Amino acid sequence: MENSRFFIPPGRYIFSVMGVSLSLALFLSGCSTARERDEPSNIVGNLRFKNAETQERLESSFRSGSLYREFQTELVADVIFADMDFRTQYSQTLKDRFFYADSAFQEMMAAERDSYENRFQFYLFLNSGINSKPVRLHKGNSAWKVLLKDDDGQLLAPQQVISIKADSTVFRYFEETFFGLDRWTEVYLVSFPKMDKARLIKKPGDHPIQLVLTGLAGTITTSWEDGKVFYAGRGE
Image (cartoon, rainbow, N blue to C red; front, side, top):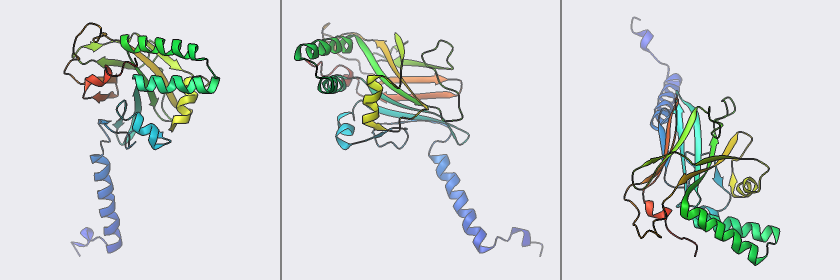
């Protein structure tokens, strides 16, 4: 009888094992750490591609990461680096939808090439959940900051952070690209200074390029191991 307090009925034993297994799985999944994803399988991020063709096309430029605290998701970030493939596809979509003349399309592409050669630009999709305060990354008093560690290992502050409105053309383009954009998703275009190394006949650096989103709650780092992809395909 003295040992009866340690007895677990068979049914309860099964549920106890299941509970321990579930807790272990949650712990191992990184519930209290920032994680990053190197392929668009959406294990961590909030967005899901609507078709395999788009997923394949954006595979090298798309990243996601999440920050967990006390078994709760603090922040989810999905990131698209605006390379020339993305810029060309987006511009071509606008041309087809709005029947732009070829001359107007060429002017648009010239502007995109200039922007690509002189700026690192990222579309950043943030979701902090229905019970959290908005991130408001474009505001000076935001609790979160975004930085870029470039291929030379230098940490850069953004030149500009633009909030993308839900009624804008680019937001609607993303709605056609992804599942997962909802009223709690904040979208930003973040720009950093970029050296036009092709024009200066300078090779890209050996460091991975990392977009860092940091605040008091923690840090999410999304990484591109091969910095050369940020200088490839000038669209010429």
